[in-house]
Image 1 (cartoon, helix red, strand yellow):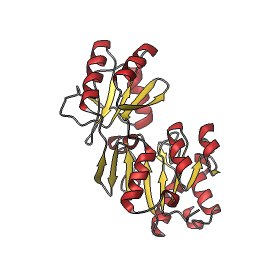
Image 2 (spheres, rainbow, N blue to C red):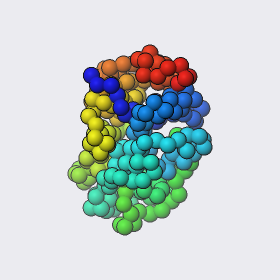
Image 3 (tube, rainbow, N blue to C red):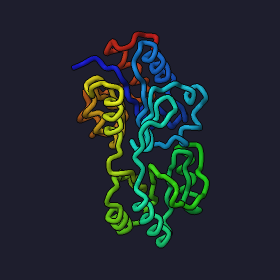
Image 4 (cartoon, rainbow, N blue to C red):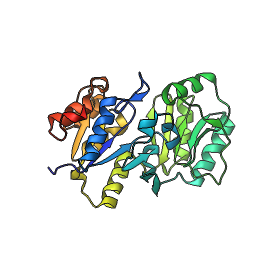
Length: 266
């Protein structure tokens, strides 16, 4: 196994603790220490870029080497977009028509923002605010919009089946009450693989931390895959290491245990 050169971190439940609405201080210190030692530090998240704007200033200003956002559909390096995998306009047209006919709300993200397709129920707004500390504006999808990620608030199983059948060139992540849609080639692991090729390194030279079912593949295929102690069972099953829970400073502790970082990672 090669020594890691690049470290990839999921946000929600891995780096970002929802109880405090903040990145754990020990994790932020670990990121700084890794970069100080010359390692690359990157984020791999289903959030769109807009959904990261409410982080505190020190986190927003952190100079990540790359951010894989929108579930792998958009990759930025030091603030500049270097790779895009938008949902096809054909699929977006079908999605818009179906949702308008059946009065289904969806959130869609572009490079510049995220929007609700129509006014939505207060409970949807409340859930969204609880997660992201912001609520998207209402803006009907326009054909010229390049969309990278969609969250569908689907009311029933038949509607899910209809949408998935009509969006044949898309990939889906089921978040129970919400169906996430991206281009079929977009996910966290393909984003990491693309970045490794771009940076001229092997997947064996990566270390990835995650907690959710959409992190399983990157944990499985990274050189060193780490599941959080608070993570899903399927993450832990494929991980090389299971660290302590997020609120127990699991990331920083493991990096020190593996002697990748010394005590300055806090």
